[in-house]
Amino acid sequence: MRAYSTLQISLHWLIAAMVGAQWYTSGAIHRTHNPLVPPTDTDLLLHALHNYGGMTIGAIMLLRLGLRLRYGTSHRVRPVSLMERAANGLHLLFYVLILMQAGTGFVTSYLWGGAGSLHSALWTVLLVLIALHVSAALYHLIRGDRVFSRMLPFVKR
Ligand code: HEM
Ligand code: HEM
Image (cartoon, rainbow, N blue to C red; front, side):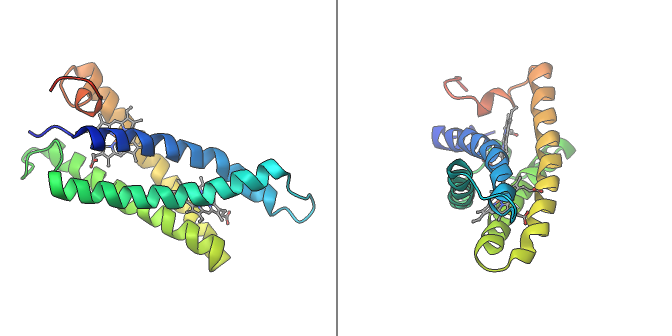
C-alpha cells in the first residue's frame, strides 16, 4: 500500500472545495442570461468565477491524473479485492467526469450553448458519485481502518 503525497492530498481537498464553489457560482449564470432582468455586477463576477474556476479545475485534474500515473494511488498496483477494484473504478470515473464537466462547460459558454443540457446532466451524475464517495469515506472512518486518514494531511502513515 502506498500513501498519497502531500501534493496529492492538498490538490484533493482543493478540488473538493472548488467543486462546491462551482455549484454556488452556477446560480448566477441563469440570472446573468435572464432577458427580463439585467444582471448585477455580483452576478457577472460570479459567472466569470464559474468559467475560470471550472477551467482551473480541469487543469488541476489533469495534473492530478499525471501525479496518479507517476506516483500511484494508495491502492496496490494490482487491486485484488472487490472493494479495491470498486474504489479504483470510482476514482477513475471522477477524473473522466470532471474533465468532461469542464469541457462541456467551456463548449457551452464559448462555442455552442446547446451543450448546456449535457453539462447539467453530468452535474447530476457527479452529485451521485460524490454521495457514493463521501458515504464510502465515512464508512471507512467509522470502521476505523486507515483509508480515511491517508487522505488527511499531517497524519503519520
Ligand atoms: C468541473 C467544473 C465545473 C462544475 C462542477 C460546474 C458546475 C455547474 C453547475 C452545477 C451548473 C448548473 C447546472 C444546472 O443548472 O442544472 C453549471 C452550469 C453552467 N456552467 Fe458549469 N461547471 C464547471 C465548469 C464550467 C466551465 C469551465 C464553464 C465555462 C468555461 C462552465 C459554464 C457553465 C454554463 C454556461 C452553465 C449554464 C448551462 C445551462 O444552463 O445551459 N462550467 N455548471
Ligand atoms: C468533489 C469532491 C471530491 C472529489 C472529486 C474527490 C475525488 C477523489 C479521488 C479521484 C480520489 C482518489 C485519489 C486520487 O486519485 O488522487 C479520492 C480519494 C479519497 N477521497 Fe475524495 N473526492 C472528493 C471529496 C471527498 C470528500 C468530501 C471526502 C471525505 C468526506 C473524501 C475522502 C476521500 C478519501 C478518504 C480518499 C482516499 C481513498 C483511498 O485511498 O482509497 N473525498 N477522492
